[in-house]
Length: 133
Image (cartoon, rainbow, N blue to C red; front, side, top):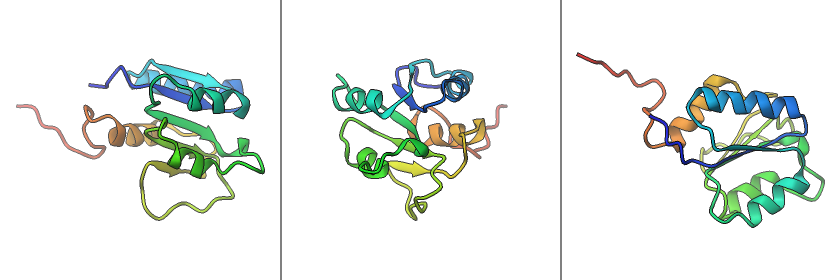
């Protein structure tokens, strides 16, 4: 059963992409999802959040010249987990950790399910067989 208290922030310049990703989270039972459409909106929300965000998803195409998204998410105590999608330039880090990187243009239901199984302790690990007798 999903932890409905998890706080999720989605950053993508395209409103439709934010809605599409938000609906995927809703399908999995997560409803504390907030979309933002620019780094100007994202940065203050992360920096001044009253409580840490459980997951921040960012379109890698939004990265500016002076901001390293990977380091920003990895080093920020206000972010528990980060996911950068549509990141064509950065190499995928060899070790899975606090921040994951995907070259996919948008995350799909399978990738979000796998991501949330690592974040939400109440979910079974993806690929786990649960038998009921």
